[in-house]
Image 1 (tube, one colour):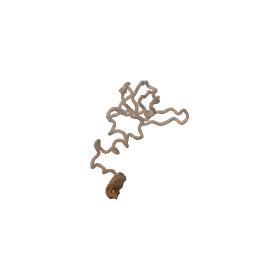
Image 2 (cartoon, one colour):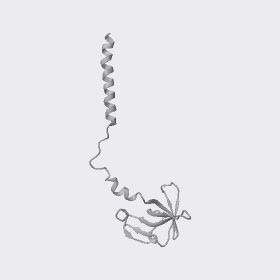
Image 3 (cartoon, one colour):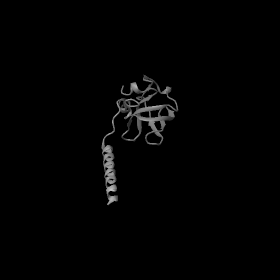
Image 4 (tube, one colour):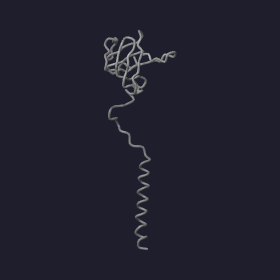
Length: 131
């Protein structure tokens, strides 16, 4: 009977501790007042619809991008309607170079499936995304 009297309170204390820790895990973590790296919805949402890559090769009719979301090199067609923006200012094709990080607004040709760049953004892009 002496062991039962000693073990019962220990067992009840262990059950209590387990139930308290289970309740603590079901609550949502406290949200920080300010995010560590700013509010992700202010910039990241603007980049969601853009196609990112690093220029691997470049000519007047197309560019090949590496480090894309597909994990493979992607060929993007360029045409006379493609707009170029560098550091928030209108630019030209001639200012692009291999190794540049670019964000593209693209459309897909329904007949051929080619990706065609409508807008090529490079440099500091945040102020010019939706222009």
